[in-house]
Image (tube, rainbow, N blue to C red):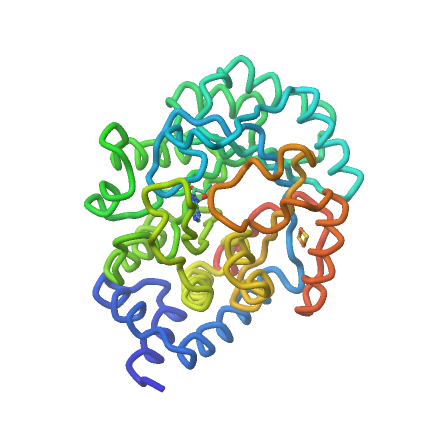
Length: 354
Ligand code: 5AD
Ligand code: FES
C-alpha cells in the first residue's frame, strides 16, 4: 500500500485540510487498499458523531419538466421522448402524509427547473407541508433561483436546499452544460442559500464526461472551503436520450473512496448513499454506508410517475411502491449494522464545536 497516500489520509484526518496538489495526489492514489484504509477512518469519524444512526429522507420527485438542457441529464428539455409530469399540491401533500406514517421526518421536494413553480405556488406547498407536520424538515432541490426567491421559500418554511455544484472547475462545467448556463451563477446560488440561512448541500457526479483527477481534487477543495452541511456524490450514469449516451458510467468504488475522504475532512457532514450508487452496483448503497455515508433517500413519489423521473438509465426503485422501498432499504441498512432513525436528521455539531 502506498505510504504516501496513507500519510495524506492521516494528514487529512488530523488537519481537515489538504492543498489542491495533495487532494489531487489523494484522488490519484485511489486503490482497493487506500480505499479500505480511508473507509475505516471514515467509519470511526462517522460513529463518533452519529453512532449507529442512518437518517432517512422521503424523496418526492415533484416535476420532470425542465427548462435547462444539461448534457448529462435525462430530463433535459431536448429529450422529446421524456413523458413530462407535474405533481399537484394535493398529490405532494398525500405523499408527505404517507411518508409521515412510514416514519419520515424530512421530505425532499426535487424537480427540474420548471417555471410552473413560481414562488407563490412553491411557498404555498412548503408552508402547507410544514403546517401539517410541524416536526418535519423540508428540503428543496429545485435548481437555480434568484436570491429573493430562495429567501421567500426559506421564510415559507424550507429548511434545507440541495444544489449540486456539479464540478468546481469552470472549464469542465462548460463541457457539461449549454452556453446559457453559467458556473458563476451556480456558485452564486450556493452562496445565496448559505447567506439566507439554509442548511446547504452541494455535490458532484463521479466519472462524468471529461472529468479528470484534478477536477475531482477541485471538487474536494471546494467542499473543504465551502463546508456544506450536505453533499451528494454519486456516479455519472449515461442516459440514452442525451448527448452523453456513449460515455461510460462512473465507478462505485471510486465514489465510495470519495465519500470516505469527504467524511474524514468533515466528520459531521450529511452524506447520502445515493440511488445512482445503488444503480451502478446492486450493493452500492450498502457500500456507501460502509464508506462513511449516513443518509438514504427512499423514493416516495407516487407509483404512476416514478418511471418518468429518469435522470439516467436503469434507475432502481422505479417499480416499487413507497412502503416496499422503505422496507427494502431498512433491511439493507440493518445488514450493514446501522439503524434507521425517525427524526429530522439535522446536521450535528462536530466534536470541536461541542
Ligand atoms: N447520472 C448521474 N447523476 C445525474 N444527475 C443528473 N443526471 C445524471 C446522470 N446522468 C445528478 C446531477 C443533479 C442531480 C439531481 O442528479 O448531479 O444535480
Ligand atoms: Fe427501493 Fe430497495 S430501496 S426497492
